[in-house]
Length: 238
Image 1 (cartoon, rainbow, N blue to C red):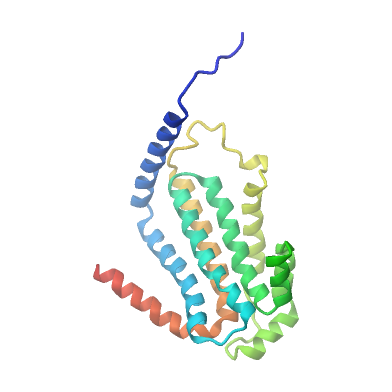
Image 2: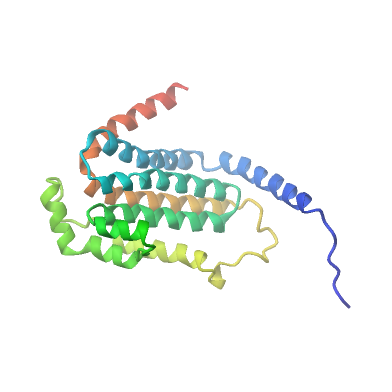
């Protein structure tokens, strides 16, 4: 017996999905309020570093081109949180992986202008493992030690956690069967555990990126602290 495909207006399907996602968003925003506020504040710091560099630091023309990445990382993280709040976990993880890649890449390319121009103008892809190896190499650590008087030779960032997190997010991006959810009965419904888990992933990505950026863009930290404090005061006043 042949299965019948019922004729349904496509806009009805999308309207139904939109209603479900909107409801998921409302539920999510009422959960994890404290964590969400903390994570959102961490996200706000990321583009501010780019703004400080633009306003107060003498940089090369290549580095000026790279400044757009700071805003892009922020945008990706906020979009990832939004998708997850709607219970769109897989798109949320895919774009979070992009944020992690770009957050690493901006430091990798900051002092390698030829790599940046190959990436931008000649479709030369960046390799995540190569970036990690470069940033954890003794040569790069010595370089940071020479330019950053507060750096004492410790790890630049948690590279083992970074690799592990990237692998998890890549499993979703590359469609590993263990990440499939299309046949789950409640796949478009709010799930407390999934929402909490995604916020944990986001905060890990933020912490990794900020730890790395603090080492390389150390000259922004004092001004960043001032602007962050100002933002917190303004939020309390609302």
